Image 1 (tube, chains in turn red, brown):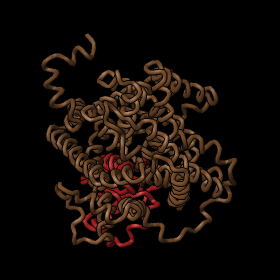
Image 2 (cartoon, one colour):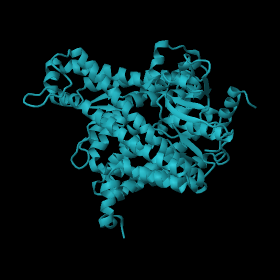
Image 3 (spheres, chains in turn brown, orange):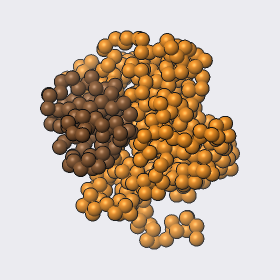
Image 4 (cartoon, one colour):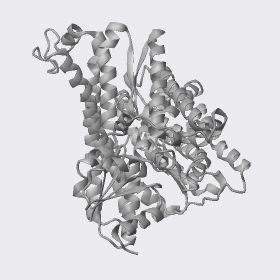
Length: 94
Length: 491
């Protein structure tokens, strides 16, 4: 599965989200390729990703996503509990 | 056997000429060692190290491009108006400081490494030092190590070497540990104990904001009730914001310098034309071209930094996970944005920009020899973060007043810093940029002035003074100090 972590600058926050995502997916035993970009760069490539993680406040930037790409807004970028919960919700797994 | 005698031996010279003085190889070597130590698969280690090297090379291209693009404008302002212009932005500041440091630039990497190790040590012995946080924001560690190395080498020219770099590391590491530790309570209040602190460039300002915002306004009259115009949303994109700021500032500057002057500057008599201003090109096109070129090089620079920092952070995080689980990570300020009012970020940016513009106008009116140009990162990130915290404690009024003041201080503090450190290192002046983030327009220039007067003793005194702060914090709140109620104690 192709996953993208995006944030305003593509520097600090997306880096953090990416590391947390990798950890959680490893725990869930799901194979993923994770990239990180700034929101501006991400906008043009989201449709080639299955899942996009971004801070809740920036979700509105991705209104042009196709339905197959799941946009996941995070309140706490560091919370593995939140990330895991939202992944499970998006993939319909318990 | 001291550092300087090791430095003079033969094999060290080979190491020095080929690796130590080349940041792209030096820090990549550190990352390589960390990866091997963490027993990462060899193929991942190979890939990661290569990305580290290439990331830095890309960064250098962006950095060089910024300096080159800015040069005619700097020259014009200096020549015509005797003005020393600088952009207050960490990436511009990084480029300017590195240029002044010259071959000493890789000393920055030594400082960076020692800053991290020192922070690790301080938090490992947290029960004694009362430090709970580990600063983990890689690109910020790079920017701060650079400016700090510049400041200390300026103040203590005798220590413009590897020994000095280690001392810089201790100074910066102490700042990063102590000040990120200062933000813990403010962050927990904002995020309902999410369990992280801020490891960024406005930590002192955040602590102050959290203390005084409640007195400046009413937290029940806050930004959740205010609607901002939709067009402001474009400024969440850094490429657009940088391009817009540059168009405005450099557009005005180039218009003032005038077409004949700029044509002559780019096509000097008797020398090769720069190729930027062909006779067939209109002035308007030239202005747009040059302004947006900054955005281009900034983008390239940031792509490179992002690539290399990804490896650096993975390496450092791995090391800290192995040794000290259960600490509070100090991370990018943007991690707090999800916890504040939805429009606090843009609100802070707008009023911070207003504060900066007011201060810049003031500098112009009072014929300041230093001219400040607004840079994207400080005006956006510092003021957005302060607005989030100000709004939480003191509502709209605080979220308006504090960014305006911060914006003004960013410009005035930055101007003072540039004026004070103008001479640069080893005769290469500092020109074109200053770090710009609020802690670096206030606390660090003050450190620089202090160190310049009291030399090595001064630097050591600063370290000791900073280390007292967490002790005082602990004393005020012994019962709850070490309780971190986050659900993510895994870093």
